[in-house]
Length: 425
Picture 1 (cartoon, rainbow, N blue to C red):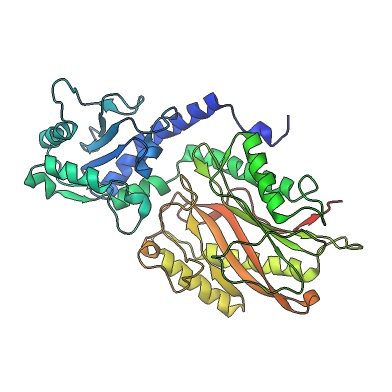
Picture 2: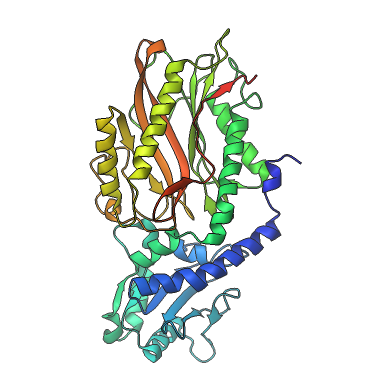
């Protein structure tokens, strides 16, 4: 069996792992977050095929969607009695949420929720409503309106935003997940490497679009999924660097002397990867990339170091961005930083450390603090002049997945420190 393929488990084993992780998260992460944010009750509601991003991540592995309307309720009764997990739904939600609704006794689902709330009398009731984070804004206006209508004024007044709960749930990584996440990133790295080789590329014949679709086919062969279409682009001597990330790269034939860039991500066991790496296509007579390109990669690596050293617990994304750009300027690095959380979503919930077109900070999402046990795609670029290319500037665009434990950052499967070269010898 291909070593890459050996990493990928059969579907049944994947489901067992997902459910085991989910049970741990519900037992440990939810109580921690509710007490951290001083929330007594958390109500999450969604209808089939229009699921709240949070509820999707709480469903059993064999549930592809919510069933009819699914309402999940967490009630924290304190450290001694723990957090009750209930479903105002026709069914138990796997083994994780016990149904608390008998339709024959109370036909109205919202009325049943209202009576449960009155019985338990919580002081602060969180729902997933947020202007700042889309992933924390999962309760639709219809659901919210019907919930409010069912509640008495007393309990309507106790509703608060569950933004910090939702973001905390999505961004927090557990010890069990972190034992496997590096393997998922290793799988992504292996697929990237195969695509940047003779398996996928014949210089003078293969186009960048060909390689993109090679990646899509390879992902499907392995039984994992892509959360975005791979990007493959070229920087070439004699052509200028384009700083506008908003336009699609035109397809082009890959030629000797090209610097290739790949942006690639997969989803496996509900976790996502996001990686950008580079390869150089050797010219006739060359055995290595020009030293200027290798030095440019070292500059990109240095920029990564400047960023990760600024990541400390409690600091906001905007504070990390400002400090990183200041440090880069001191070292003469022409830097752009746009790092984001990763986990259940490729562009995950949590603090943004810049956007490519917002280098002065990102209001709102950049003001969120960094918490321990979170994962990030360390994404950035450095513009560097290449002596061998008549000092033409190129962008070294890097992205590697990393874990922040509250004190330091570690890459989940290392990072690119040498250019791929092809053909490989």
